[in-house]
Length: 92
Image (cartoon, rainbow, N blue to C red; front, top):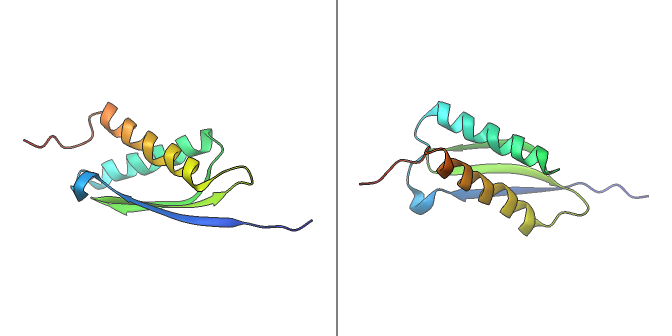
């Protein structure tokens, strides 16, 4: 049986590239949450990082995972979590 490992580099920005993730502590909270949430959903994230206005994840796809679904589960849930906890900056 052949062994295949597929890694995908995901990257996404904050809304209109606003620097919402403006502190190192906040970024660490968000990256940790992304990894924990992915783990709960059976998604293997090898590496997570980013800066004030974007995030990167290196993901190993499972045999039954699609790029679209994995991205939706990671990005969509992390955005929801950030908004739910009020971590985003309120633009006035």
